[in-house]
Image (cartoon, rainbow, N blue to C red; front, side, top):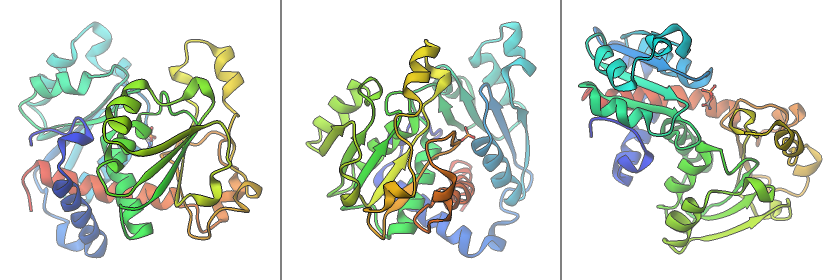
Length: 303
Ligand code: CP
């Protein structure tokens, strides 16, 4: 495997290998601190980011490598009309590995086809975000001790939420998982996720517009309603506060519930929830750095 464009590029064995490597990185970071000495990571971000870009950069720095890149399209030659393919081919001359975020679905794949170094999809439009999924899988594994037999509630913007699409696709391959898809009617998961992933694999799932399944959930994956993906501001304003997680709302949830959110949060989780031990979303942030360290090592062929 040269690149990571979709979570489906990784076999279940490869996913477990990354989780195991991340666990080792957490346990013994000193063992890895010079593994990428002399290697360079380029972060090409055509869309805003805090966690993904900086965790990639922190990951490479902690492996002893160095980083270069840009954090907005306007400061690159994309603003002069350069194609994604030409940009990727150019950056291949300067860096050993590329992490790219782009608003257009499929742009990282185009980059991967033009680049002669590994390309990692760091989020493409409303499509995929495979390294967030790796982060989520590591977090679920560390919090619950397994990736099987879990009832997972996804809540919020399931239409544009690329992290939701990637995580459903990943969790669908583990035995005994079931899904509760909680959203307003207009923000339900896209038809291709329902048809190609959930229905085709005969998975147990339910679409709902209420919280009634809360007591049964093992994991609650909250998401932000994504203003930047709406064509119409009035629709965004109408839908943005449809689901807000409060401490009261958690009263009848399991004591071992694990609450995740890819972040950034706007106001879909009340800040008081952060003090609840079940809120795992900042632990999830830290896990993101370790799994990206594991991924960089894998794609560079370093053990
Ligand atoms: N979770 C995530 O992708 O966050 P950023 O947009 O800050 O990178």
